Amino acid sequence: MEDHLDSFVCPITHEVMEDPVVASDGHSYERSSISRWFRQNNTSPITNNVVAHKTLVPNHALKQAIVEFREKFAPFIETKPRSPSPRRKEPLPQRGTFIYAVVRPMPIYLAPSFVLSHGTMLNVDTIVIGKERLYGEDNVVFVELSGHHEGKYVFESRDGLSYLERLDMTEELSVYVVSTTVPLSLWPSPSVPSNSLYKAYPWDVLSIEATIEDRNGTMYGRLECSKLWVRLSPNFMTQWPLNSSPHVFLLPRAVDLCTNANTTALGVPLIEIPSYTLVKSHALIHVEETWYIRTTHSSFTGWLSVQDVMPLEGPPPRIAEGPAGKLIQFALQQDSMALILDEIQESGDVSQRMFMRHLPRRFERQLLNCAQKGRRVHRIALGPRGEWYCSGAKPDGSGECCWASDDLPLRFRAEMEPNSLVAFGQDDEYAMILGQGGLMLSNLSTSLLIRLRNARRVHMIVLARYGGYAIKDNRGLDCSCLDPAFEDALRHPPRGAGQVCSAVYSDDEFVVLFEHDFVASSGFTSHIFQVLRDFYDRHRAMRQKRRQLISEYQRLCPDLY
Image (cartoon, rainbow, N blue to C red; front, top):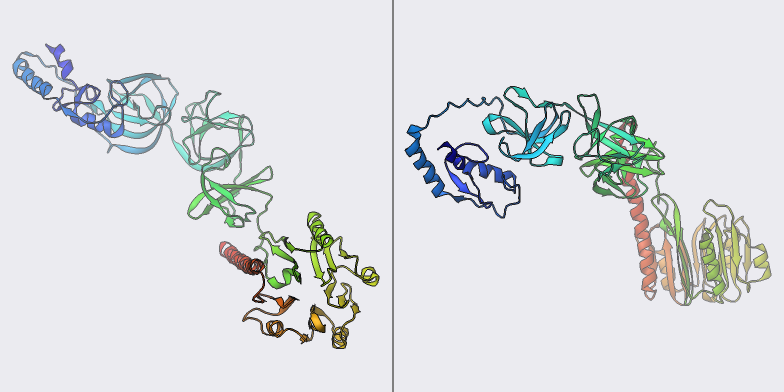
């Protein structure tokens, strides 16, 4: 008769059921035990197959059969006294990371019960990792595994015999540089298959957040913010000393902040840090001309790697502090136009942007040739008959040259110098203030001749029609016979615009460039107007951004101020 009791026993608790229910796998279980199982699993405790649903149906027939069996046969059955289960000594369940070494061969179970074995045996010295400790059958402490056997169970001890030995984990940040290709695994193991999905390769940098030592003295490390483990053998990798002194870097380009020092494959990107952002290191190493920097940005802490950069020894240099108007070269004659903008980059370098329209072919070709050869154009001038002049040099100031159109007088072409201030007018008028000092003048009005010869320094000159002119020198601004609207724009700059830097005028259209703003005639082309507006705004924003960057450096490094 006792054989019939097997169908009354729950496969999980191994005890006669009080409230039997049927699951979707067709088997009956104690309601409380199968409910607890389904809270953590989507599989059948018996078949290990995924269940179609988790609905439980009361098994009234089985429950009634158990009651009738007890009433009819219990008086005639000799019950054997059952050995008491061990008392519960710990407040479980407990979640966390639990690492053990197997000290006796043991199976893996599908549930915290000795009935449902997975069929896999763990050998002695195998290292297993659990994520939860809980009481199971007979109040034995079971461990729910993670990693290779996610959701399976082993037990710590039984009948006074220990099967698992807890290994202490040391949580401390360290960095290793790989010398030989090494496989990674979800559990620490001295022998990981060479075809492992995850590997680290020579010169890979790995940040390790925790280490353990097995019973044989072998060290293993867990990759930072990862479940992967690696054997810390000097045959595979070398530990590099971490520099924990704070250093500040100015990032030359946008970089990803990652969870691991291995920012190329094993680290997960957290956030992209924009270019020209200051970062302060918590720890760093320098390997093969690459800095691996641990830092915090926007509440995310992680690693980034950069090359071609060194720690700052002081605040970033100021940029774009000069007037934007002095970085513009402009020439205008009727439908012909040349506009050259010196755009300051966050690196402090200067790049030129050119806008050209209906220029004499050779003039246009010469400007493009300067750009192609890395020369920076410093001066340009364009006359009403298509005569032109331009001057340029390499960014370091070397290789200064100047060029002019063939239709200019031989004397002009023979005596012209690089970096000269040139203006062309009607009736063969021209004025050239030579780069090395001196004047070359032709057909100018007497008043302008006197003004030029008495000036110690000329900043701007415009030759207009009918002998009109505008000149700004060390004595100030002087205008004669100009269009009233043009003269008014020269003499009355917008509020905060600063001093006049240069101006262009042709056929009643004009642009006056001030230090911090500009004024254009109402009929001036809207496209170039917007280009100039964007240039001034960009220059102002660049200056403000760098000032904020310097303030940020002072905040990061208060000891230096």
